[in-house]
Length: 287
Image (cartoon, rainbow, N blue to C red; front, side, top):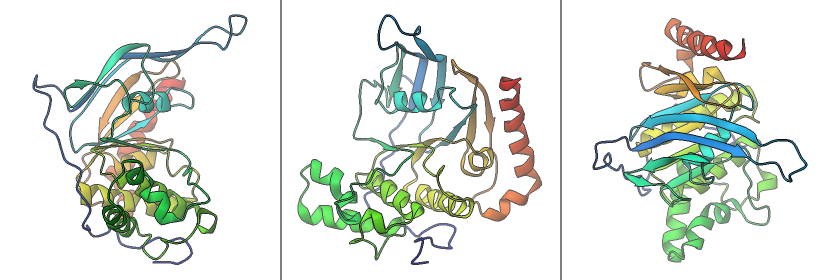
């Protein structure tokens, strides 16, 4: 591991003793593990004299199975982040509903973890104490907090940086810490909103490898918003393409690439063919 950026060169970090994400069965009615049913979202203007309401999402439906990794791409401003926030219970749809594990989703759930575009670490807390915060808020025993925080920091490659402060971290390391903070309470669903968008290309590629390693270690379900077509194809089992605002899902492209995935895969003909297919789907929305 480089002390400068905290990145390991292995394609996937080894599993450690962290409580695994428990995979729930599909709903009793036989539906998907996670389903959005005809959801819409409208943002009202601040006052009656301002512009008319903004329709961010048109009628949108999707289904995600347990253990699946789905990436969402589309033009800027098409409602990708709005969709992700609704799936995470952080935002209520104007119409429609989200079903999570057979129950109506009405707000944030402990089983759902969210990684934002920016790390948003508390500057006065060390890396360890930032990661431990969710468990502290749950009033877990001190020994459990310490053990789980240490284990998840090892998983994301930040072992040895526990007592560093956010100002002492590189961009990649800060995002690792933010990811660890989300993983520490073992969510069953991991939602990622362009988490690596501010990183340089090399660090971003390596973070993608680390994310695949985490997925392997947890066997987790993940939905990630990204503007990078190659990133989406490299990570996902399935890529969803959204239209211009008001956003709706207009294409879904299966990614039957072999696992485990390595960076060499990006030079393969199958990879190029899939990225071209996703790009054409996006271009059709911008025509």
